[in-house]
Length: 364
Image (tube, rainbow, N blue to C red):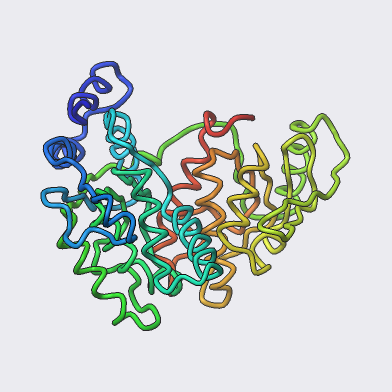
């Protein structure tokens, strides 16, 4: 196991990264996590306790995680990637928070079918058996189903000796802000403060901005933008006739109106106007290399549900490195400027800007 600070400096020396004082200030905190883990062996359960299915009664001492928050595009995810890279023999998993919670909810459903009285514990213990360092990208809580279980879930993970490192755009006290039954969520915030060191990455540079590349975002979504997307479709598919396709997701099907050779095209309303969720968008992201979206509208309280789905879709495409080509009412930073959800959309706008880079994705 190495040190994050050493790898960071190697990348700076090789020209892969630019030195950033705010990022450098975070490195000792990340090194501290790995050093603590190396000095603290994972908790052991006796054979008798394992036979009884009883978890550890006390949290694992000295294994305090890290909650890294700050503005979009400041390098939080990059730093966490470096940490996962140097973890060495520590069983480590790097996963987007949305995807992880989808897996947890699926596990809870299976536990209910088995008649488990405590559905969270066996699911959390299953995670702990495979992972000691859990690295989350973009922790945010918007779903009440997630909000109601994260406290219990993380308590069991911590008790099992799992160390959590996560990035977020918000400090812990702003998670699930204004959410339904938020008072039931507050103990989770206290748990974060207790079991994770909270550090702000206060860089003045957004590394997702000021990128150059071939145009993939067309605004406004007028006839010229449609013609541009038609041209891109023809170039990417060698003029193939579009045909609809079905993607299987947990026993149901998600339809994309046009598909050819792992290139797909759909309207905003077909993708975000229907009651689709993270699992559906993750499946779409796995099924395509390039996605063309027609007609992204301005987003506001009047289409809040559609806006939330669009955010989830972009998260899935971003994590899967899918090339996005779209027409929209305006540039990403101007799509959602006020009302509930506009703060969260700053991260999405930053990602949309980064995804316009010529090197993004696997095809052009």
